[in-house]
Length: 304
Image (tube, rainbow, N blue to C red):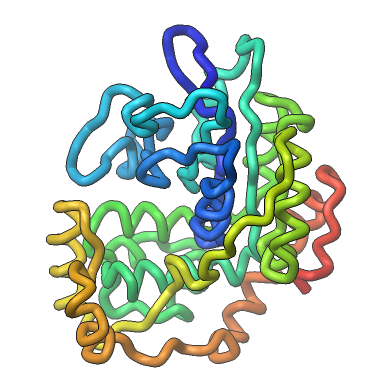
């Protein structure tokens, strides 16, 4: 843990981006003998003022960052898995004079696919979108016409996420700011697609970056936090909202989980059904991806 100006910071930020496998990687890293992950995975502690995700966990406002690591394991690297961290501006200013900078891991996913996954997650898993197709959503992003998106969302968090996704997928804008704040030597950029292809190699490279021994970790499910399709979104939204306030996710009891899935989960729409919209988004991101590849020496051919 890093203590600076009477504030504790984690040794390692798993800083995002959202819907890029951060939960899967967090679970793998937290199983390492030299890493302690925070609980929950996303404490939303270092979130900018005015952001609806700011430090809200199960309806409780926690004032001490160490609360997320109780009991605190000494001698470990402490890991924060808040995927929104990549976009925060106020946090970066706190690093200016810090003698020891935190290490930062970024998982980047091909932007158009990430936007589709985020839309599907918000629309289905959270059931927080009304009568807005993905094609209409892409139209509203590219025009831009955020009012259409906002009017289709059931709550502030959904509206905030979906209206920011185009900007949030221009990764170079945010990584450049992080480079100035912590230095490129303290940053590691991971491609989601490469991690899926060979997670063992990715973990080995991360361990080298963090300066800890490589361990053979028990692989979890890549389907953790995966986007789903829901038949009755109204019921799902009500249950999800009710039980998330109590610290549960829908379905809330393992005894009825299988029944709930049979009744509510519908077949997931294939990405190919959105190919035209994905192509439009990919065209938009070409110059941003080219700058990202050049500045951070990344081979992004897998995104094509």
